[in-house]
Image 1 (cartoon, each protein chain N blue to C red):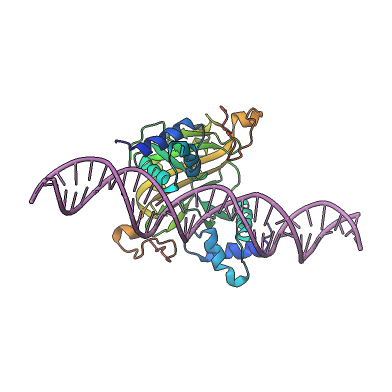
Image 2: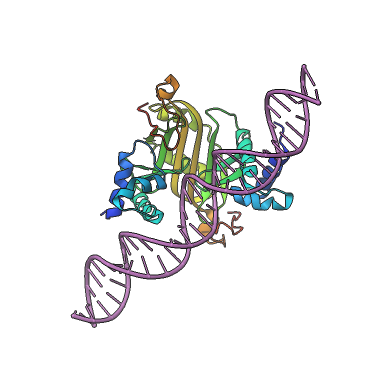
Length: 145
Length: 145
DNA sequence: GCTGTTATGTTATAACGTAACAAGATGGGA
DNA sequence: TCCCATCTTGTTACGTTATAACATAACAGC
């Protein structure tokens, strides 16, 4: 997929960040590059998500650049481990969940389009007290565990 | 747990609804009963979530009353199947996932507090064309599959 | 040049969530 | 009884997240 200029900018901002960024954080990061209004960011995010290059972390209302290559389709499960204190996030590979999800959701769903799994807790660093900052939304948070 | 008046109202509104309600939808539903401002609803929701009586469906930004009894702790996994067209939601039991989650998230997390799994797709009814309404956020949507 | 499509851009507003403060209600003690 | 702590209720105002609606540019193909 060919990325447009704006999509490149947004993707690059997310790749530079050490933790998930809200759409407005992306906007702020890109103001110096001429990005001025929310829809620009949201449109780019939408395309990038469609291409599997970016995921939305639902429980944070924030976005991360993806490191893996996902197949699209039912086994395109997006799974994240999230430290609720310092904001660190790790993307997990959980392809083995695909089949059991199909069985479990069969009561309601005939087709699966998208699955997401988010596990939150405390990272090793925060448990040891090594992650200085409390997650302040603005703070640069994200420790290396 | 003893519920306060407001908590009762909120829980009852969610139980009556056939699909997840946003906090503001709850607010609207309770205006006739004297509930006038968002914090009242959010506070009640927070307590109800803490008690496991209500869950937040992250990918919808909405809340549902819980039908099961959950143990609290790591195996308190909240799993939902969601029809992206008509808005129907089914809460799944996925206790077997608990252990594998622990393993998968171990790289980052030392402790798990909360896990959520959301699977979206099309329900049997929507695939057959039996669910009339497209999910319009205001529409009463939710088919019986 | 014309046309259809995609990308870009703006303004304004909807929808979701919380901070900060004030005021009643309750339930002990001293 | 009075004082104090605590909990619940309530308000206003604000911050954050997301989208609607519209206008314009850029470009490919005829």
